[in-house]
Image 1 (cartoon, rainbow, N blue to C red):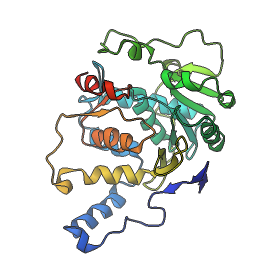
Image 2 (image 1 turned 45 degrees about the horizontal axis):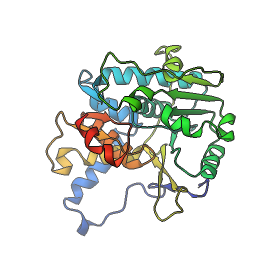
Image 3 (image 1 turned 90 degrees about the vertical axis):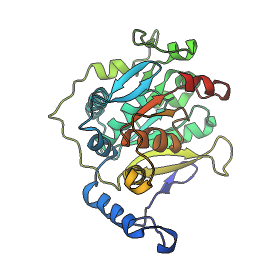
Image 4 (image 1 turned 135 degrees about the horizontal axis):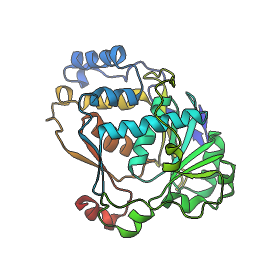
Amino acid sequence: SIYTRGIVMNIYANEKFPSYEKKHVKNYKKVEKALTEIDLNHNWSWYDEVYFRWKNDLNKLAIYFRGYEITGREMFEKADILACALKKKGIRKGDEILACMANCPEAIYLLLAVSKCGAIVNFWSSKFDRHFIKEIIEGSNSRILFATSDEWNNIKELPICENIETKIIVPLDAVLKKRDVWHNEEKLKEVDNICDKTIATFSDFINCTEKNKQIKFDKCTLDDPFTITYTSGSTKIGFPKAIIHKNRAYISIARFHDPDLSRMPAMRNMRGLAHIPLHSNTNIASAISDTLCQKCTVACEPIYEADFFAKSLAI
């Protein structure tokens, strides 16, 4: 399929499984069995895969955000409410949702909610070339944008943003200005003086919705597209290539990181630092998906700066 400036790479588009040769794979029968088992018993959304792994340990810590601890139960409750809000907004399977976000708990809720709806989340950056951002927004035909306040402040003056019907802003001002541990009693600063009726805060967007068990979500499969991320490769600066990733990509990678296949020790009660920009699939696959699928904690860090890296580890 054609997307914006080039061809979108469709992972495993023409193959049931990734190709491999027996001479290059140790215990290839074990690999083949695992891939077959994924198709037979895990032919569902990324949301379903994460929930399948967490359903008996929902009181464990799933997200850590500068002192604020979120259990698996709380994470899924927020994601479920957000999924219901998206359905009420008219989001259906295959619809694209724009996201320009730093690493924060709301980004994980969005990933889970979009996956549950069978929609596609398109993560991009305010640092992309302005003309490329225009192409992304125009090419998506999306009616809704999720943005953290730091990213929104960089793009809100762009005329193309006026065409988006609904903008959901996650205010990170308090975190980004103080740059210290964010304790439980602190509240994220809400967006001030909202005059644009197309803008709402994340909390306002989900607070008007309740988790509704009567809402039916479309069945998703391994081969349904889930995310669009961007890789620079050898492309022109500011115009990275868009890549579509299916549910299969994240679920397969997660399965092959399980101890019985990876031969690595189990990741027990560890934290994975998520601070690489969200438009990079490395962040979603390694820092978020793999960490959650091992029932470990994702430590979200919105600031991505070389001179701040050591402090982000300490936090």
